[in-house]
Image (cartoon, rainbow, N blue to C red; front, side, top):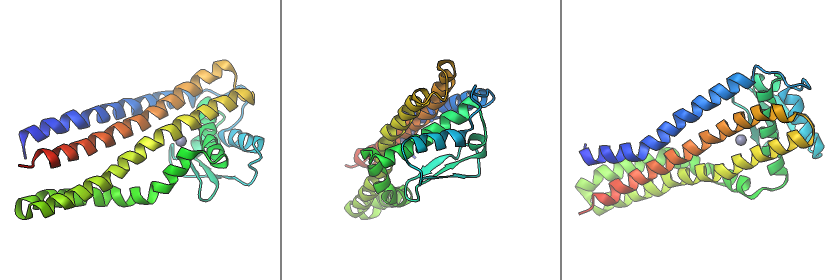
Length: 235
Ligand SMILES: [Zn+2]
């Protein structure tokens, strides 16, 4: 539409996009490498997560299998830890690292870790804002030509709704970093992995953390782009 808008879009969208591709490459290569190396104790991801949960008396948290690759997650509302077959059944270094990370989320939940609670609380607003926000923004932005101020206000509501999505990706950062920190600490403290094996866990979990940084950078870039479009075009 406008040449300057395209340049602005490139400037704001490109960092998140490139960082995201870089992070995906790092995850693929780290997980690819360390999912082929068996850990010395021969513990599977599911056994590792169970051991960590039991260590903290969290016997009522169930571990289930979920379909897909790297679809592992902890579900705080149902108190269920779901591990993919590649992680739950595998006795690799990478599997143990990912499973321990997910158990780390369960520990956060049990200890009422603030950022996790905050993140869970805004999930409904995020689900709402992620599709309605851009829709209202685009609609309002285009309507400005015909109805002026009214269109501007609709676009502004869209911008604010969409900004909640960016806030979510930012709150996700401490939640993810902390879960990995807990995982690394417990794997050493509970003597599940040796120092040499921890190198693989660190590489796998740090690469995964980078994907969340990329998502936050991309979301902030998009919100800034919307903001520049909206406020930059006013006469
Ligand atoms: Zn996580």
